[in-house]
Amino acid sequence: MVKRLIVWTSETAVEVSLLGVVLAVLLGHDQNAFVKDVFLYGSGILLLFFTTGYLLTTAIARTFWKGKSLWLYPCIAVLLFLLHFEIMNVGVGGAFAALDRFRIRIVGALVVLACTCLGTLALRRWTRTAVMKHP
Image 1: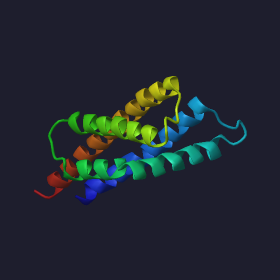
Image 2 (image 1 turned 30 degrees about the vertical axis):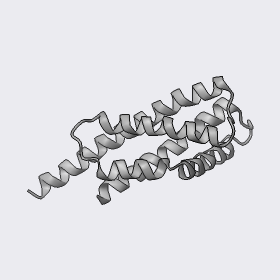
Image 3 (image 1 turned 30 degrees about the horizontal axis):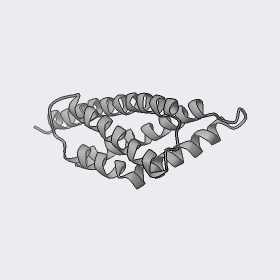
């Protein structure tokens, strides 16, 4: 279970960082302070992930999901991202224009899919190596 939480933490950190970059590029940033703006967007994303329950639901899913399929947990995580993004958008009164919302959902889903697929592969390799070393 500890390995699963470490992988989940890594996935979430990369998701927040990449989504911070996505928002900075899509919504605008200060040319002289790109890294600062990415950090600010990332901090906002982390806060929204926490307040909408995304962190809790993905942590539970990653910790207890032991399915053999490479794609099932990433698909669950993408669905959770889309659901929690809509919860956040409704909660803040429709903060994004329709075109921005569409682009954020698409790119966000791709970021989550990529991060969770890589995390699933890493977890498989990590647990398989541990099993091979300790039969």
